[in-house]
Image 1: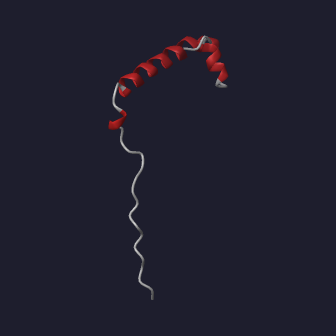
Image 2 (image 1 turned 120 degrees about the vertical axis):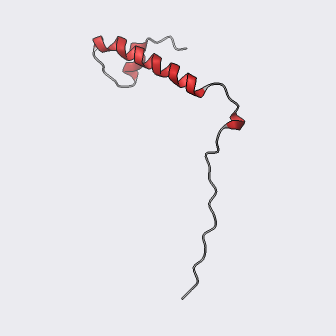
Image 3 (image 1 turned 90 degrees about the vertical axis):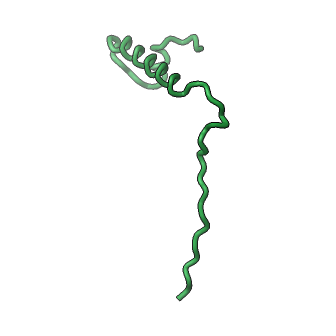
Length: 64
């Protein structure tokens, strides 16, 4: 984990929240990170859906 503070990481993204909003923002980020970890869960990459699709060859229209 980074040694930088949460505030420094927020500022590095270009966000400029008000100082009194910082604790709420940090709590929101932690909640979202926990939720994402629950959704991801441990799984095998073999179970990942394919991100590619197969195209059928185009049918050639008859001339004329």
